[in-house]
Length: 107
Image (tube, rainbow, N blue to C red; front, side, top):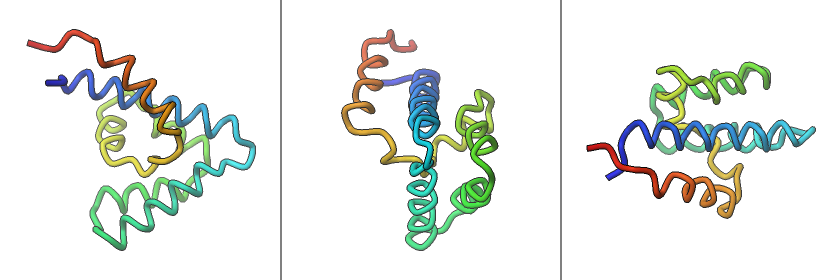
């Protein structure tokens, strides 16, 4: 069983990779992908956290970027329902998952 701490660290690593991918794209296509995902989720299953993400995604990239890589409780909470899925390729995502696969488990 994975510990919550390990899952949070893996989630932060994924968010940092997503930020790097969006930073590297001058058109910031990942932002539109996240906005589209958020809009679909709101139609399919509206929830307060998805509405919160919708408001965050109305901001500028530096503000959104800060939310994604926030190491505090707020960042951890929001990453649990991040609409930034699909930004990384399966290969990129699984490479990060493998980095955390062999970590010692919490007792």
